[in-house]
Every structure is written in structure tokens, then in C-alpha cells.
Image (cartoon, rainbow, N blue to C red; front, side, top):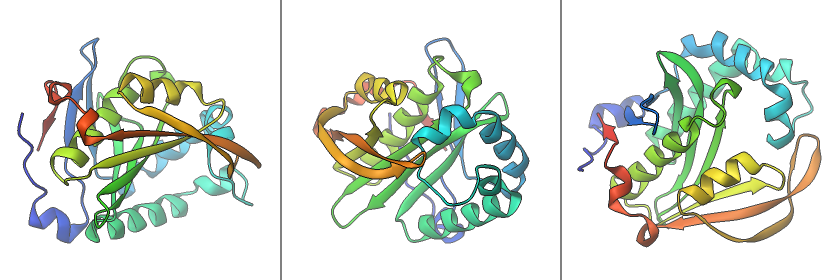
Length: 211
């Protein structure tokens, strides 16, 4: 399928394109620009799923609740729009049945045509393919619309659910980066997963749409 380029208005406003896909079970997954109004649901899910997310999330001196205030979300939205205006990032929330279900982000270096992915999904969607479709949508957009050549995903050792998504989508594990970064309050090794454009079959986008 074809992917329409990001509109001039979207670039000026720092907005992400709206991307849609369907899981194997027929669930529609939508990626869209984060909104200020998402603050309450974002906080609720992140606090409820703290035990699942925090061990693999970048460390902070702040407590988990203090990292998830309305103000923290507003700052995150503003920063995301700034990066999207500069074309140095693609930042989206995952939506299922009109409800926020996670986030899927990409940090982009267009000069070197490379990008790095980040993902979290609400526990209510664990194992139902929502995370896989979200990453698939972002990959297709990076390769087919932005001309990215290489996508990486550093995944903490022990984060098996995310590693399975990477493997399912054709990522290759290049090796282990020892003591790569502090997550969940401790230094952790991270496996470096990568996908290059030549590895990405166009058939992977057959059930995806962009608008």
C-alpha cells in the first residue's frame, strides 16, 4: 500500500500522522498524537501497571506517582510536539476502542537515516497483538514515509514480552550492551535489536492504513 507523506500542517503543529492497523483477532489499533486530555487515563494506567513497567523504565529520583502527575504529562506532550516539529521524533499514543492503551515512540536521526523505538502497552492488552501492531505501524511509517534505513530497539534483559515482539517483526539481536542504562533503579544489560529496510517485507503493511 502507499503511505501519504506527513502534511505541512502536521509538521508545523508538531502532530503525528494517524496510523491504523488490525490485529489477527480483528481488533483495530490506532496511533495518534498525544493530547493534554490524555493525562488522567495515562496516569491511571501507569500507576496500575507500575510493577510491570517500572523495572524496565528509565530511572528517576522521583517516586513513580510523582513522575505521573498531570504536569508531567503536559511537559511530555510539549516536548513530543517540539521533537516532531524538528522531525527528530515520532510520538504517539496507542488507542483501542477509543481508550488509551499505551505509547509507541521513535527517536529519529534523519541525517544518518536511523531511528530508535520505545513502547509500553497497558496490561489489559498483554498478549493480544496490540503492541505488535503498534510497532509494525511505526516501522512502516519510518521506512516507507521518512526513508529511515535502520531501526534499533534496546531491550532490557528480562523484558521477554518486548523481545518477543521484536523477534516476531523480524528484528535481529546484534548482541548485549553491558550495563547499558539505569532502569527500575539499577544498571541493566540491554540486548540491541535491529531491523534494516532490506529486512522489511512490504507485505507486512497489507493491513495497515495511514491518514
